[in-house]
Image 1 (tube, rainbow, N blue to C red):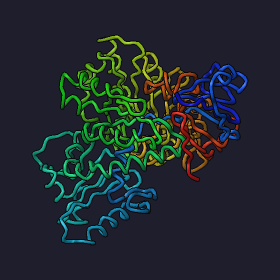
Image 2 (image 1 turned 90 degrees about the vertical axis):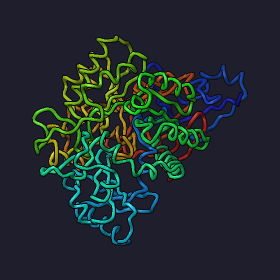
Image 3 (image 1 turned 45 degrees about the horizontal axis):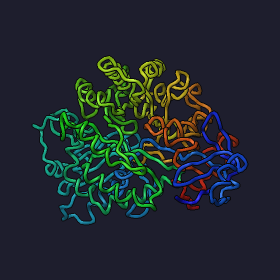
Image 4 (image 1 turned 120 degrees about the horizontal axis):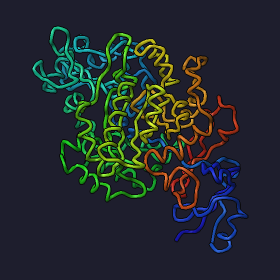
Amino acid sequence: MTKLTVFTAKHIRTMDAGRPLADAVAVKDGRIVSVGTLATMRNWLDREEHVIDDRFSDKVIFPGFIDPHTHLQASGSLMGMTYIGPLDQNGPNGFDEGLTSRQAVLDKLKRVADQDPMSQDPILAWGFDPALHGGQLHRDELDAVSATRPIWTMTYAPHVVVANSPMLDIIGVDETTNVYGIEKYDDGRLNGQFIELGATTIALRPVVGFLADPKRGAAALWAQGRTAQKAGITLTADMAFGKLGIDYELGLHKKVVEDDAFPLRMLLVPLGPPLNAQHGAEAPSYLRKLMASNTDKLAVHGVKFINDGSYPAQTLRLRYPGYLDGHKGHRGETPWEDLWGAMLPYWKAGFQIHSHANGDETVEMTLDLLEQLQLAHPRFDHRFTIEHYCLSTPDQARRLKALGGLASVNNMFVHYRALLHADSGFGFDRAEATARLGSLEREGVVFALHSDFSLVLTPISPLTAVWIAVERIALDGKTVLAPGERIGVDRAMRAITIDAAHVIGRDRVHGSVEVGKYADFTVLDEDPYEVEPARIRDIRVHATVLGGKPFLTEN
């Protein structure tokens, strides 16, 4: 048994509505023993050898922030490719200046190709932004960069791969390949585009060796984990576990996350289609076996299905009248008519299902699907979660509540992307109403806020998400987007603590400073409840505490 340690603070926001404020928290064996004041926990202190740790005495302590939808290992591995994104980036290859035009992207690819014009090594590039860069790339313009050297590019949100002709030969597809998402020009030639999971899985085959490099993957996890910790995060959920192989990814995460120096706990949420393809009817049993090795720091959790495309890649599915250019977007890997059968075994086995739905047409389909699952096999507290929930309608929030569902919302797009997509894709009506948190709150739906880091063009920063939820200020610094969808500070802070824990099925041990829970805390210089809302995103994260162990952030 370790010695009892008492952390004191200016005050502690417990997120326990019955006991919302405290001045001290006592910790032992990585768990919370008592919360209150030194006086109220005297019955413990009189009995236990203890130490008073006052390093946070002028700070504000919250439960450890939770980001319930991230992609730390995958995004970190992609950063090793040639960067063609619009944001400045410090990656493993050094500093990369953001590229803000399509021509700048093509020019950079040409410079890379011209460095060794005789090479046959593929150019692997990542970060393209079709909204900012003028639509998706295509085969002919990449052939104009190089007709001899293979070129493989991926959008920042990795829902689209585009290849030139030599790369198409390596991938092994031609005009006779009949797979959803492998696109063609009007004349029937392949246009080089692989859109959404079924197609991008094929396009990934030649680069799996690059992405599944254990050394690169471990470095990516360490780097992204430290980035998350600096933002105040103590728990994340990886929402695409197994894309590169369950054994490889599980072994990699065990090696890194279980290290005492790694500053996060992590959940790994497997993708349903690969599980079904590899294990068939035995997939739920296999998933149960994976969960048998769960630890307090690393755990396999639930199952995820991707049902449409991406907000930033402009491939999500929209109801009438669709996109400004008339297209409707793309579904995920599994045909919608097959989703019920794909999900039902996990539903019956009692697993939590996370269902990716960005567009309002996909949200509607997902609600229909949840209703069908309930009719076939009624469940209580199933926590079926719509992931992203970017474009929706008020009636869908009401229906989500009626069906007992939850939402994990990427509201970062309100500030960083909405005005851009109003002009380039969705129209102002839909773009303004991105991430309808006010509607969810009015209907009583439990929801979380997430970053999707770093496979979208937004930061990992729970306090920034809170600021956006409260203010809904666009990137121009003046436009308030759908003011009726704003929420208050308390509800927003719940969405990165106790409600986020509920959404990923961990509120028994996470999300509040409460007796018996893990001693995971976020330590702030200032209190979001007490500053002007406009300043919430600027509050400095001083430290995190994981299982009673402090991790100071770097200045």
